Image: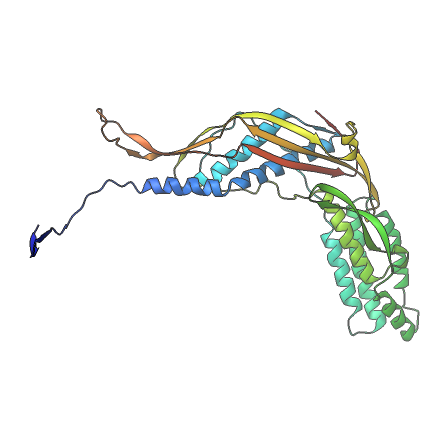
Length: 360
């Protein structure tokens, strides 16, 4: 290295340019840090996945007539949700202490019926002879009836009678063209509405509300579409989570995970009217659009951790040599973090068109 001497009055400055510097920096440490930061940023996803698994477990039990509020099963589901998050972020997971089998549900849907009603309304409004439009509308209504028959006889019984009346109005083949055109214009009107009681999901769970709904005795094509959309919202109450556990591929980071977490307390609190009265049975409610009596069970789960859980990730593929260590030894690079969150809470709402009980 060259040295440069610079003098100015009483001051002297010596500079030595450096051409090569060696430093011990392990870049894999920053990968571990970044993975842990992502895990912390997405901590709420553990709560969401746990909530969905609780829903699935509750529905599976309700279909059998009994929902068991089990502290052991809730703890196992929470641990499974945590493991799933480890797998998604780190590419591996620390095995849970217990596991349970979740039910597989195929939710019913009214979307094909809504689409058929939209097609019927579109056909009725086209620029074409009235009798031709009537035939096209009847074809769409037959498709709609086929969808409804697949849902069972108990759902939408009042709509099936109204559809039969609507189809009779569309029998215009023997009418003069001007009379057929008048019938089609009437079926394109908005229709008469009435005030009815319905249910919706609010901040505190299932809530009763009053809404304006189509009057089925004077059904038109626009009111038919509004009715089906209202029925679709009520059907959503029977299964608000059609996708519970989307698959996540294992990551390529090559990391291992160790977790220290102990669940100290799990508590359940019933919130539906029958539960507030101390009864095990679910609360009966009437769903106006679907025309059925359903049973509603609602409870809140609170899960407490004994201490702040510790998450440790290890990079066995990249061992490091500890400084000032008397023996030649290699240890995996690691990153440890104590997660501050200790309480998780979720609300479960089960609505089924059959009675069931909830037991501790």
